[in-house]
Amino acid sequence: MGNFGVNMSYCRFENTVKALEECLEDLYDKGGVEAVEENASQYEKGHIRGLIELCQQVVDEYGDDIGL
Image (cartoon, rainbow, N blue to C red; front, side, top):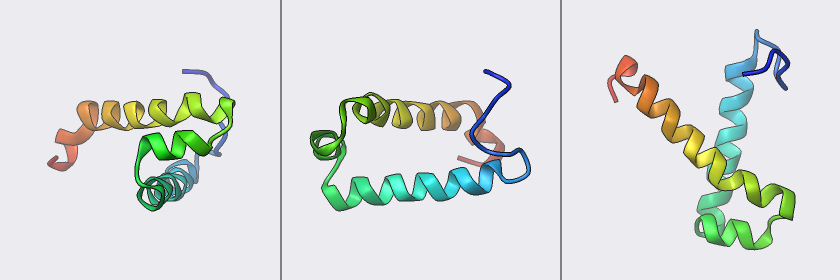
């Protein structure tokens, strides 16, 4: 992982939770991954599934810490 992020350390998780909630809402509203991908830019398409895979990695690595 790099040393330069898009969020300041004091609000990283707060901002990320808000952004993830927006992404989840978009997936719900549009009916899933494929529907979101249809309307996404080429740049954005490469990150939709990557986001879901990263969320799965977080759960796999740290879910037990919070009882998941």
